[in-house]
Length: 148
Picture 1 (spheres, rainbow, N blue to C red):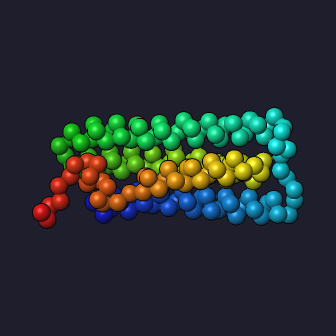
Picture 2 (tube, helix red, strand yellow; picture 1 turned 120 degrees about the vertical axis):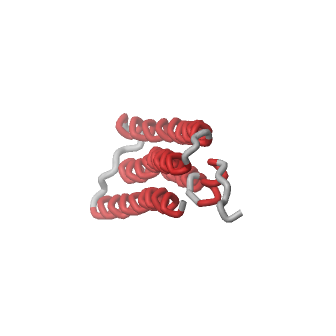
């Protein structure tokens, strides 16, 4: 069980690491030159719309699909297969939501609108709901503790 939690945690913290790296790179690139796009330009509107639409669709879809698949995984008899499928599903859920976080940070440095900061905050909060733990995995898969 610990191995599964560590594997999912690796993806979880990798997403935040990529977010921090994209923030640092974005800051350094825009600090030396003013390479932002006009807020009212078609490119700016298209980029912000794309990010917002992605976040609006990806967060509920990732959470719903993971929940639906968890209900299927509960029915599996083999706990090893159950945990492996859970780990793969949890990783995909994190990647789907985390991509929106990294994307919103990158687009923020391109167009400099506060709506991208709100998008980043929304996806960061959504990622908090996906943080793995042993208790959460046991609860979602209806696993009994062998020590009990």
